[in-house]
Length: 108
Image (cartoon, one colour):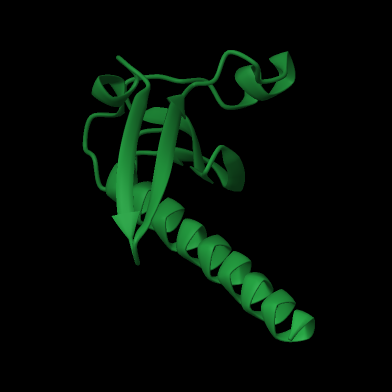
């Protein structure tokens, strides 16, 4: 019985992690499709997503202040480029962190 409960718990953790990955990919794709990256940089975002009966908190940080200076220099945030960090958590536990740098095609 204890093995069954442990297996069920492990499966639930894996499912939450997989869902967090899917959510972060969806958010990144949404941001990639934006035409004006300067507008995105105006504010950081916090959203709530409910999937499969679980509530996920999605935090998006545009041009994070804690980036190393060499990264800020190499990947500056401008009207046509943006550094994005998306963190997805469930019950206060960080499940997925995704970071990327987008540049509008043909602009830099």
